[in-house]
Length: 286
Length: 210
Image (cartoon, rainbow over all chains, first blue to last red; front, side, top):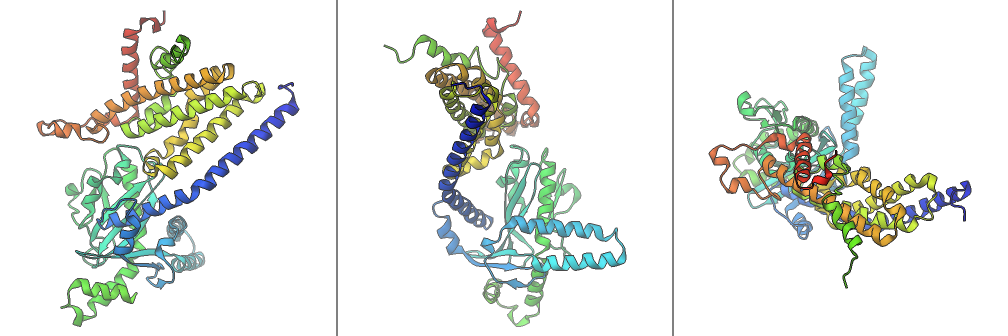
C-alpha cells in the first residue's frame, strides 16, 4: 500500500483522530466520578481546615456533617436566599464581582444619564449575587466560613476564611492555588503564611470595611497591626492578588455582617448571655 | 543468558550518562528549569515523563510503517498529547494531592522536546522493544538530572529535602544562615545544569568538542 498518497494520509488522520477521541472520552467519562469525588472531598477538607479541624480524605465527609451546622446563600444586599452554599459555583460569582468592579471604575468617567443606567446594573448584580456562607459549631465556639476566590500570578487562587461570631475577627484562613510559582507565590498554601491571619480584623473600629492589607516589607514597619499581613518576597503579584481576593470577596458580605452586628447590639437583654449561645440562636433563625 | 543484549543495555544506560538528554543533547531544558524548585514535583514529573516517553515510543514504533511521512510530526504530537491527557486524568483520579502540586507541569510534558526528539530520532526507525528501552533510558536520564537539580535547589533555596527541614534540624539558621532566594528562581536551575554539564565533561572527556 502506498502510505504517501493523499487519500491514505487523510484516512490515516481521520481514523487516528477517531480512535484517540474514543480513548480519551472513555477514560474521562470513567474517571469523572472519582475526580468529582476528589474535588468535593477537598472542599470538605478546606472548609474544615479553615476552622482548624484536621481531616483526612477518608473522614472529611463525616467530620463535615458533624461540625458544619449551617450552609446558606446570601445576596450582596445581605438577604438570605434559598439554596445550599456548598453547591454555589464560585467562578461565575467571581466574574460577576469583576464585572461590578469594572462598572464601578467606569462610574467616574461617564455622563449623568449613563451613570444612572450603570448604577441600575450594579444594583441588579447585587441582587443576582449568590454568596455561600457556612456556619460551624465546635468545642471552642461558633464560626462562620466564607469561600474566597481570586487571581494569582499564573492562575486562580482560592481559599476559605473563617470569622468569629463578631463578624469581624478572623479565626482561621486557608488558601490554595492552581499553579503559583513553587517556593514563591505557592507559599500561600503554607501554614507560616496562613497563621498570621488569625486575630486580624476585617472592619475598622468605626465600622468601615478594610479586609486585609498585604505589605511588602512587613506590616510591622507600617504599623497596621489590625489588618496587616506580611507579603511573600518574590511572590508580590500573588500577594497582591490575595489581598484583592479577600477584599473583593468579603466586601459583598459586609451588608449582612453589619445587619447581624446591629441586630446583636440592639438586643440588650441578650448581652449578658454568653456570646456562643447567642450566635447559635442567630444561625438557627437564618 | 542475560535478559538484554549489550546493545540493548547501552540503549538504557547511555542516556543516563554520555548521551543524556539534558546535559548532552540539551533537550527538555525548559521543564528542567520550571519544576526543579522542589524535589517532590520534580520526582512525579520525572515519573510521568518516563511513562509518556516509553509508551509514546512503543506506540509510534508500532505504527512506524503505517504513518504517512508528511504528517508524521502531527501524528507524534497527537500520540504524545493524548498520553499526557491520560496521565493527567489518571493522576487527578487516583493521586489527587500530587496532581494538584504538579498542576500545569503535567500539561507541559507535551512541550518537552525530549519526547518529540526520541520519537523522531529513534522510534520511527526502530522496533518496539528497542524503542521501549530507549524511552525508558531517556526518561530516566531526564529524571536523574531533574532530581539532582531539584535536590540542590530545594536544599539551598528552601533549606529542605523532600520537604524535610534539614538545615533547621542541624541548626544552621541559629548560627545566622539564610536561605538563598536566588536558588528558587529559574536562572539558578540553568547554572546548576551548567555545573552538572561541566562535571560530566570533566569525567567523560569524549564529550568535549574539539
